Length: 232
Image (cartoon, rainbow, N blue to C red; front, top):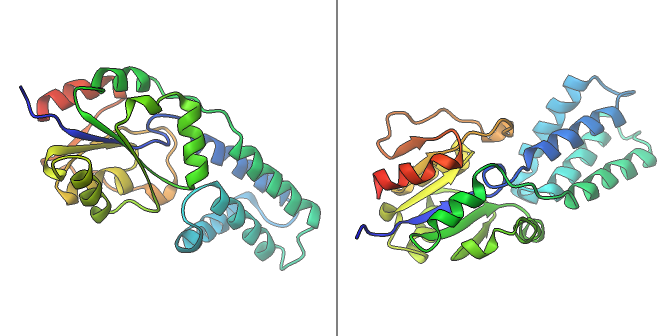
């Protein structure tokens, strides 16, 4: 028998939709502040605030909401109406309640791989929100372990794949972010499988590591079984 792999799955925009809710809320944010700044300027200032605040607030909706408020204060020179702050907070709360819609082939892929390999959900963001989405997705029972982390780095994958398997050399990470899911996993010694999503946050963009022998790219999760059969 082939040696089982430890397979890490990203969650947001790999197993279920996520970025679409950020984009919709960003559109509402621009509308809230239309009297104070142009749309392009607002989105750029918001992205700057998000990146600036990652080290303080981390990834997730709560940090995004705080960054929207901070941006609103900045672009209005402190004159943002209290009603607009309330609207931003309401929009953030609505994001925390959004339904979970799994991506095509996600459940089928997990059903196929569960029991044959060790499956680990590796996701970053707010603990409560990620736990809520996992529960709502109905996918939790397929995983042997769940790791909700503050960030994804080479050290993160080395630790997780050593804890839940035989080390990164016998592991693969599957996700839609080259910067967070694929490249640091390869740097740790694992396979990195890139599953592009139509919407990816600008902060997560990176060049595909075509020269890396442990890099693979698929168009959807329905192709993952064939890739894992090749590398395991």
